[in-house]
Amino acid sequence: MNKIRVLIVDDHAVYRMGLIALLDTEPDIEVVGEAEDGRSALRKAAKLAPDVVVMDLMMPVMDGIAATREFREQLPAAKVLVLTTSTTSDDLAN
Image 1 (tube, rainbow, N blue to C red):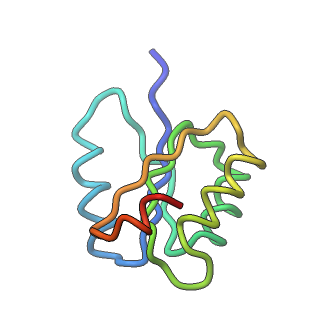
Image 2 (image 1 turned 135 degrees about the vertical axis):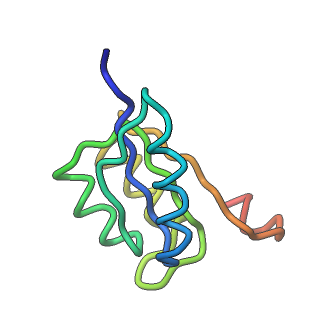
């Protein structure tokens, strides 16, 4: 059985660790990497070829919106799941 390969992208290390711990309990999911910003995520994804990227929106260097646009061009097979604490509809509409 092939596992779903996941890359976690968030600028908060504790949040990343929590998501990794949660996803590691799922037998069908393998966390293949983590990144602290969008630019780092793109570099890592090119090497790791994740099936799913769990993306925060608000990050330094390259935010999740810009990174998601790049992912759609560079790794079109990867699905991006946005997790955010933002409640601003402008953030979610981009």
